Image 1 (tube, rainbow, N blue to C red):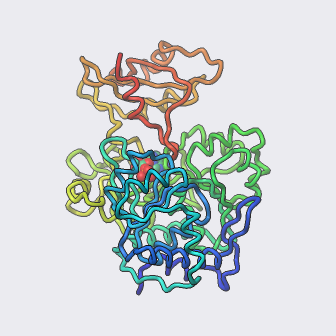
Image 2: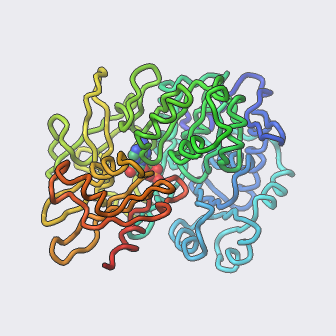
Length: 498
Ligand code: AMP
């Protein structure tokens, strides 16, 4: 059978096609048949621009429902969709274009001139120009048959060290993951997803839209997250997906209250760790236990807390059906009990490798087909049928001080629990004596009079001496990327000098 993800989406659409799919507050309602018709027209326009199956289409544009139609168009025409963070600048874009060699580049009007000047092979145009071209084409198109291992997308990982790598995502990866999530999170045609995530990342593009499209549901489509707007729109939604920052911002929003959540059946969080404190404060304010899940570009969604079952703060739940997760020591041997080790994953969700980096790909897979996620974790017995995964941090964030391992999360959790602390990030900074020294970067609550000595004093006797921060640095905010991840590399660099 044809494994094209578009065919699967079309089979799951509500019959007749006239059901609403995308609701833009204050804007038009886009029905399923309109979305599909637009995608067929765009697919024809891309083919007319010279695209043949397997060609890459790079897209760096603001969020708009036409972008979703463009993504579906690429699936339909057997092209490889390559979304790019709207924050990427010229030199970064040049790298992506040289690496992926797209046939078509769709960009913002203000970038058109500069990008077109540097491109000989690709057709460069704005989304409006593409839509103009598409308007002349038919609204129907048989999807190009695809095998399960054919590429559907390339997503460049944000990679804080070295060059960004293009993760090759297949139709099988996307379909298997989407079907598992629809089932696990109980999506039905009656659902309305509040969609305020960016759509250049796996979370907003795949997780959120696939759950909607494969259940025939609909989504409230917002260009960006604005806490006041979201609080006002929640009564029209049944599910919200967000990064942890969405939840902390909602908690800080005075108009956000329990009554506004009465239609919501599920709040999902992922892409970065959700603080236990946020989980608890959200539950106290709304009565909802946020469902935290864990995933990554290379593997889609990997684990999830349960829809009907315990949701445990600080954990990301058991593996999703069909996915194997193991925790291994430095020799690759599975850990026993709750020992901390590297998280490895295997299953139909696993990407096909890094674009044109066979060596790098080989290095990240084990001989028996597991992918080394680069995350460090442990199994936690939470009293459920299966142990839940706890993510302790990224392997590269591990601090080795005087030859001893320090996992930042253990220290961050203790500092976060101190009176007067909003949040913290613990990083290793160069130290002539210890190799690396533990440094804590702390955000204080307004008005709090917490000093370095207070923080170190509070931890003394609670944790081993070698784990105690040698420096405590107070800042107004932690640097975060668009998905809410704390950029530890930025902190390491900023505080490397004594
Ligand atoms: P990305 O490929 O940009 O989606 O980033 C994936 C990384 O985000 C993972 O490898 C984890 O380090 C982190 N991540 C995603 N979800 C969670 C979570 N729920 N808790 C902790 N870290 C997470």
